[in-house]
Length: 359
Image 1 (cartoon, helix red, strand yellow):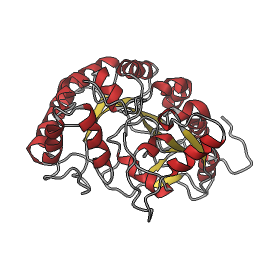
Image 2 (cartoon, one colour):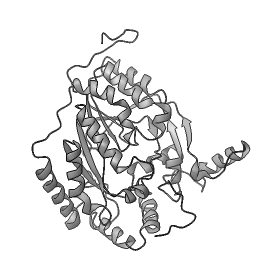
Image 3 (cartoon, rainbow, N blue to C red):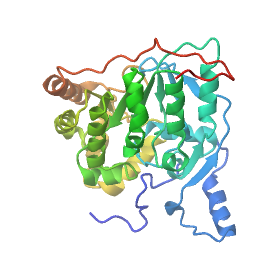
Image 4 (cartoon, rainbow, N blue to C red):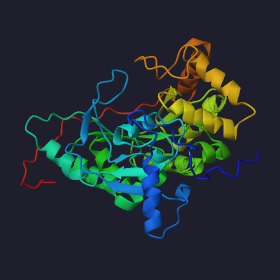
C-alpha cells in the first residue's frame, strides 16, 4: 500500500496528542522548532531527536503494581526513540510536560547521574538486595544508549555490588555489554528478556521503526545464550488481527535461537495510546483497521483498555482465552525442559561510601 506523503517515515506516532496536564493546547515541539530556526538548522522535526539532561534525586522506584515482576525498577531514559505506537509508557511523558505522541519519540530525557544515584542507593545501610528491573518504563538500550552509555555504567555498578538485575529490551545493542553480562551471569546476577512479537520484518519496520531487525534480535538471543546468560523472550504485545497468528512461529524460532522461556501480554491501549495507535493502524492497515480494533476490544470487555490488575495484561473473553491457550501450548511444545534460574540475592556486597570493592 502507498503511504500518505505526510507520513513520518522512521517514526511510529504520526500525531501529537494533547497533554491532559496542560491547560492550553501547546507542545514543546514549537519551542524546539524555534530553537532550530534560531540556530539555522533543518526544521523538519520528524528527522530530529532532542536529548535533554535531567537531574533526578533518586533513580530506583518501588513497584506497587501486584501484576508486575520485580519489586523495583529504574529508567536511565524517559521517552523512547524506538517509536512503538502501542507502548504503554507513552502516557508517562505527559508528567514531564510533553506529548505521548511524537514528542515521546523525539524528546528524550537523559539521566546521566543514574549510576551515581544507584551506587548511593546500594550504600544505604537499610538497603536489602531485591531484583531491580532495568528498565520498567522505556528501553534502556534505545538509540540514546549508544551516545550516552548510561546502561553499561549501571551494569558496572550492579556487578561491583553483586546486586541482581533483570533487563528487558528490543535492541541488539545489548550485545555490546555481553562481557559484563557474562560475568554477572556467572554470579547469578542477571536475567535478560528480549521482546520479539513477530517474524515479519515488514511489519516490524512500521510497528517498531527504530528497533533492531527481527534477524538481529534472534542473533542476540543466540549470542546471550551461548555466553550462559539466561534469556527469556517476551512475545509481546500480542495484537489480535495483526501478529496473534505468529505465536507458534515466534516461539519455535526463539527456542531454536536459545531462549529458555517465553512470556506474553495482550495489547492494551491505555490513556492517549488508543488515539495514537488507531491513527497508526488506519494509516498503515486501512483495509483491516476496524477488524483489529474490534478484536482488541473483544479482549477488554468492549474497550480498548483495561486497567484492572491481574486482568489488564492478559485480557478476558474468548479472544484472550485463545491467545492464552496458544501460549500454553507453545510452552509445552518448545520449553518443557527449560527454565530460567533464580537470581542470586545472597552475595550482595555493601561497600560504604569512600571504600573500594575487594572485587
